[in-house]
Length: 124
Image (cartoon, rainbow, N blue to C red):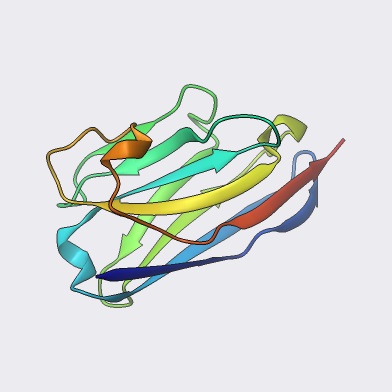
């Protein structure tokens, strides 16, 4: 079992930055691929960014390329999402997920573990 806890969300003005954290406990986190997803009210959870288990490959949704960066600190069992140049349309609850390598990085159903989510609100 892997337990995930997100933090770092909040209210920020458009153009601002936030860094989300996802702390993992339980099984060795280093072997898992991870991803960030977001869900706005009335919408389905959508893929934002993924990181392979080795940490060598990253995958970004077109809407966040060049603005968001994922990183992972295996020593701290923590994944980060640095979000810059935030836009009002980035407003959502952000979730981190962990999955065994090999399955689809952009599919919600591929992830075995999820955190509780953290709210990000970007004002115009």
